[in-house]
Image (cartoon, rainbow, N blue to C red):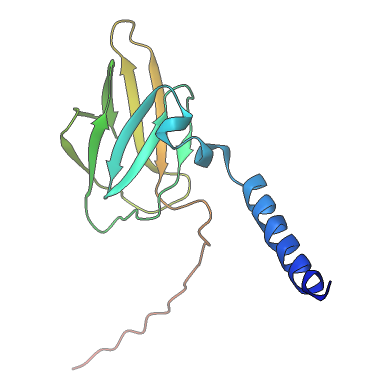
Length: 149
């Protein structure tokens, strides 16, 4: 009986924590595995896999390793029946496209435009430049100018 007084609350806490974590997941995060969708676009962005659900449109995706310091490699791993454009530039299956961000912001990033071969129907997706959960920090610097004669 004493064991249940110690382990019971601990087990209840663990179960409640898992339940809260599962209920607060974003829908886009749950649809990013290949098993969860029937039609997917598979990309490799800066070394990280990204699975885009082609049944949705206008979805923003978050990745942890976005940068504006240098161009990021994006490799198209799986694409069937569509022409792909990354920030307006065409990209082909198996090729590496180098994409550069001007700045890291939550409401800008890489635009992915898919045009279906045959009927020309378009879908757009976005990779956020700054993860939505990232904190915004403002740094104000005051510059001092020194003159020498």
